[in-house]
Amino acid sequence: KMRISKIARSALLTLLFSHILGLGHLSREAQGSIMYDRALAGYVIASLETHGFLSCAHKCLCYPSCKSYNYHPTTKELGLCEINNDEGDLEANFIGLKGSLFAKLTRQEVSKRLENNSITNRSCFNIFSV
Image (cartoon, rainbow, N blue to C red; front, side):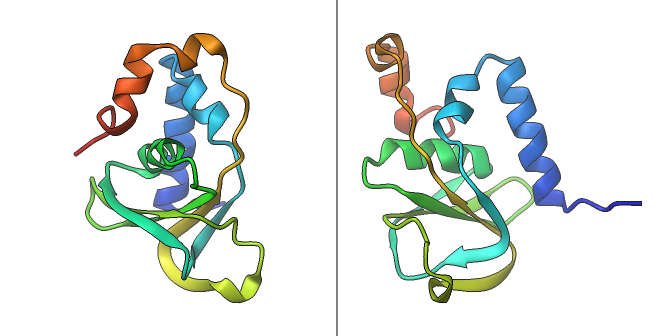
């Protein structure tokens, strides 16, 4: 029987529900590679408390210089989101950190409709805030 970690299960469920609820634009913009039990060290430009890794990805999108993020669960509902200004291409820049994840962000073109949507613009720091 294959065991999937709690954070991996949460990540998969959050992406699934984001598509079902019509939040697909968030996950499409935040596509990238995810590494478990790892964190990029030395490139953090902001640290925020969020409700999960997807809200951390959303916060990353709010920072033009964000190229990746670390997410560290701190409680059952909250976690520490670290916004990085580097993609983490060098293995030497990573540390092992049980329960955490690192995600490299790949930005994609956003439609003009989304760019001009005042709700989307206003929600950058409000939609998933604690």
